[in-house]
Image 1 (cartoon, rainbow, N blue to C red):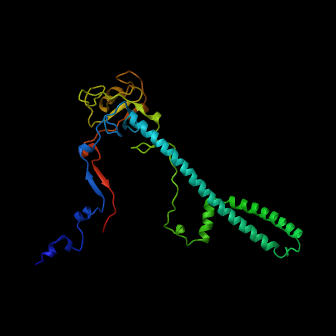
Image 2: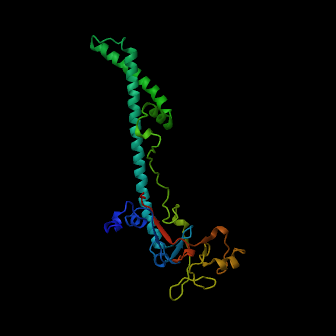
Image 3: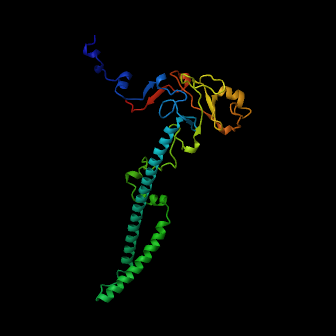
Length: 293
């Protein structure tokens, strides 16, 4: 019969799955409820009903003021990152040039000392010493130029291969080592959701009709837009349910509200709203943490 102490959790020689999760090990999963989902027509940045709404090419809806402020802040941040990136590259290039110059100078000095050491006897007067120094300087400069051409013609990969042969014991030359590389900043600010470059000119103004209670509705059927797919036509800015878009406007390529023509590229599939049910999309959030065996 087990003792009372043997029934305690700490008496086991292993941890249960529940105990491991309580200690913070392993991937943490939590189900998202309806309150944590973004309703259709709400700004993806301010999480409030979009004011003067605009849509990105990926179908995300923003308030114009919120996305403009975001892009402006990210543009300034990106400008600073590009300047820091250039400075870091210049510093690395400067260090490489200094190392190359030292190797070339050392090789030149060794060559001059080896070739002219016996012929250039110790100077007996100042005039002879100055002449010999001029000869050394001319020969050294010629050799420096010759060696510099041969060194500069080598690619970065060839230089690294030579260093690896002569210093194979260094950690960065180990088979499993991954050299840290500088991450080049993107040319333009990235979308906060799709992660793709986003320009202010790519934003499309849209109109989202709302009921007296503030619920967004389809511009064609006046039905409330909840979790169904909605589309926006870039040329007119009208928002409608995809069901009525397919029935009325998909074939004719004419906006049913304004009568303006549009092309297939002008159709934007807007981001759908989600509920706490799995049928509406992703309802589980995951946070990875180290595992425990």
